[in-house]
Amino acid sequence: MVIKTIEKLRETLATARRENKTIGFVPTMGFLHEGHLSLIRKANEENDLVVVSIFVNPTQFGPNEDFETYPRNIEQDTTLANEAGADIIFNPSATEIYPIGSSSWVNVEGDITSVLCGASRPTHFQGVTTVVNILFNIVKPHRAYFGQKDAQQAAVLTKMVQDLHIDLELVVCSIVREADGLALSSRNTYLSSEERKQALILNQSLLKANEAYKKGETDTKTLTKLIKDTINTMPLATIDYVSIYSYPALQEIEKIETPAIIAVAVKFGKTRLIDNILLENSK
Ligand code: PAF
Image 1 (cartoon, rainbow, N blue to C red):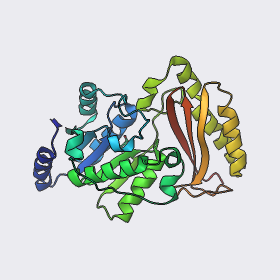
Image 2 (image 1 turned 135 degrees about the vertical axis):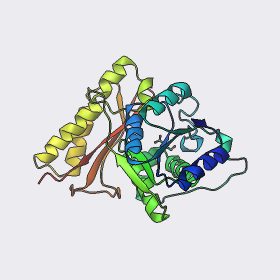
Image 3 (image 1 turned 120 degrees about the vertical axis):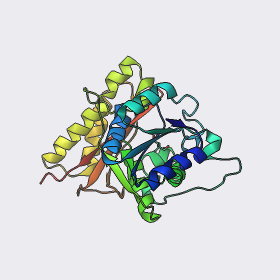
Image 4 (image 1 turned 90 degrees about the vertical axis):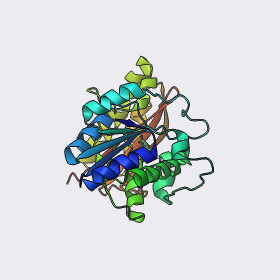
């Protein structure tokens, strides 16, 4: 069932709540791929009712970013989401979510939002936390599902839920990759075949650094250089950042003390891809 208005969604969910059904929620911007579908399947396993939102959120895009051209296909998304176990697809308009005159923001402050993607996309996380908060207020889910591919987003939202005492369980699910290692992303569709081939270096460089770490290398400068050198072997790659931080607080570290994250953002042509790996304790 596709629902477009908050009123109708609230009415439908109120009935489910009266029947003591648990509600799982998967917020998305659509153009669903296997990564999203794995979240929907998990939500379906763990809840009585699954709501998937499909909303390309304008407030998380910067002025020169790809809001207008972000890929959209609501018909295909509806079929895929239903097959994966969605009961309700919430597909609101921008004015339904942000009525004219709305002027409230939710902000998580500190390093957690200012490093990594926050450095090159200064208003991005404010847009994400605001829309996710709005969606949580509308859906009031028992559990909400996000992917580890957007590791910083997962950390920021986990902090928001803690700080604001939002009464739900936030579930973070592992990255889904193509057979050749490319992390799934709706933006992969922008890549030319040559760019896609070269983009495999992201996962390869992370695995290489993880190997070096497992063999005993804990110096973050050395590991960062190893990754940068590896990525720079690809002529179409332009590095935005290669960073190693504690996780989930995202504090700078000189030596790796787990848990830590290596996160990369690299442009291939106009397409900016992100990937990451969590470093587990190897000792
Ligand atoms: O991860 C995304 O697709 C978006 O950032 C989210 C969480 C749906 C908010 O618009």
